[in-house]
Length: 493
Image: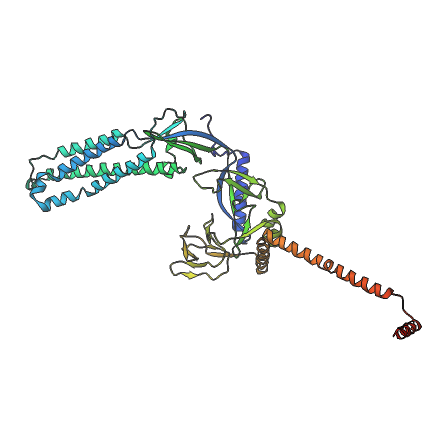
């Protein structure tokens, strides 16, 4: 690894100081503004705009095989057999029952640890590993020397228990009883370490084999000289391979290089409807210099305190940005994106200790007396009492952040007409979005059929007109001609 990464060390120069002052003023303005609109100020979030990638091999050594592990277990079992057949325990049944019962936990750990070992061997291969990266971190797993040391420690304490002791002398002499107790404690401790260490190793291998870097191993790799201290890094498991005496995984670390801090704006939900970005992963942020609202899109999508994500800032359309700033519902719906969602936290703790309760169907109780707050949602509650928000069968409890906070309730600045308008527009939007491609095709075909219906009757109308025209164009026969034709017929008769 070359070079030292820039990990959010703040530059407290003149321009940086001015930026923080502007952020502070913006937050102060929004938090002291009694209006509750389309968004509220949330927590500070950190992100980076550039990353550095480092690869290293995580090596979990298993420097023994099944036969060697079996010998270790056999050594412990031989000691336990000697323990059960110890002469004083044969002389006094109640006395022996007390001591023999104390090793049940150790025996259980021995069995579980041995079973875990067989599972670990299932992940290993048959070939020796020969090559690794220059940067390697060896995970501290249980070695064969560790197991031999445990057996030696247990045997040493067992040998302090002398064969000439009797149940009576053990009862009478505290040093004999303490020696036996010490053996039990050492046996219990060593078997507990045996079982727990192997369980942690198996859990680590199982996670890595599933391409998931386990939380239990986070930060341990920084002990490697080639990695060193890191802040806000993210890890990806590239591949893992089991060898004869090791399980090795190639790990990729993404190290943030240029870290920035911004204020998040939380969309307020009205009847489950709230502002959204171009997609549901984007977040609204408040920039400092110059002060404006924009979108933050990150990968990975979730920004957590322990991980600094790689993000890009996307400019929000000026009409939308202005509509959000001035809580203009009518303008915002035509220039911003809205969505309806029921999967959201109904209550959010704000940076100043107040609580935003929004959405639909939530009830609010204050203090031990459970005074119900009778107000429409959304609302911001500031109080020095405990707040309980009940929604969808779940309770969200917020302890007071300050005992001196002035109790107040901030309701929405949006009129009921604006909220109803938002609901109506959202309903129509959802109606049109539910139309599938075939729905549009069917509508188009219906329109074509409507246009072609008059054309279908054109041939019939044309034939009728032709028949009427021919009939009207025939030469009329005079009355004299008709009389002569009738007389001719009579003569022939």
